[in-house]
Image (cartoon, rainbow, N blue to C red; front, side, top):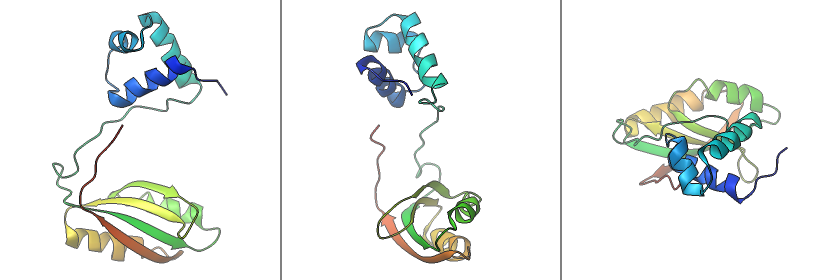
Length: 145
């Protein structure tokens, strides 16, 4: 486990803002040399803190006009089975095992309300270990970092 300093944290902020930023731009933004930025990013990657880079997209422009958080109550000790089945549903953008009133929360992106209904009622609820679901529609969402 490595200890992060303020410069490491600043580099991570810059990469979250724009993972395609050049090494020079990152170095200038955090006030270190290009070689220093490169070495720190390599160290953060080697330590497993940086696990990859991704692209953020606009779901509506991609044709996903219905989004929802779907919470699940699942049977005890079935998380591995449930998560494996959920990973096969392409409309699920994010999933997390959580503690509280429910066990799992999903971010689902669908073409429209009919498609969302199909995903929840036919794909998700068809998994035997899922005891119940609750769907909360998203009217508008934003990525903050």
